Length: 151
Image (tube, rainbow, N blue to C red; front, side, top):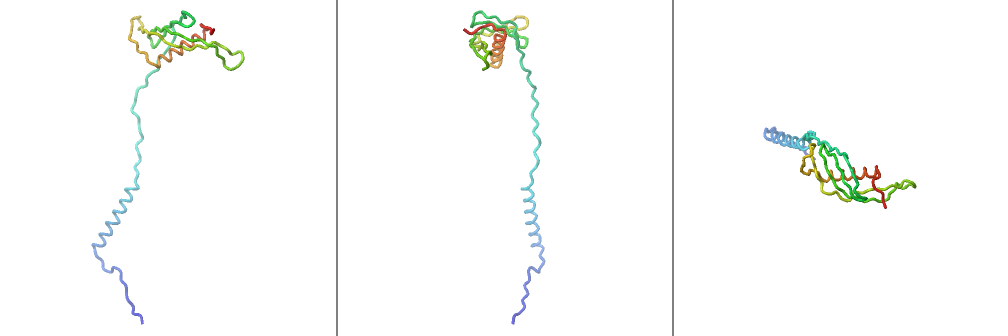
């Protein structure tokens, strides 16, 4: 009937087969671990940059020459800044009856002259930020003291 056949699988021990299987297994394992490893990043520490102190502004004097023109002397970080300016006045309100007031908008700053603490002329170092702040100072001072009235 049926003859028994023995099926043998690799009965012989060969050092080459064992070494090859070990190397393949080790390389697959090391490769998998290498791909799975994600090193933690060092936290970013920014380079120290000294902070710049904001400028200090203040009105020393402000004189209206006419309804639309005036001159101001602004104290800017210990320097005296002489500024001629023109303004436009108009009626405004807060939207509530009885809250009407004369609002002012600075139209133009004239030639700016800067003097040091001793009154010596100094090169004009003002920039657009200084001009904006000077406009706001002039506007606020005129509105607070009601130096102009809208027609």
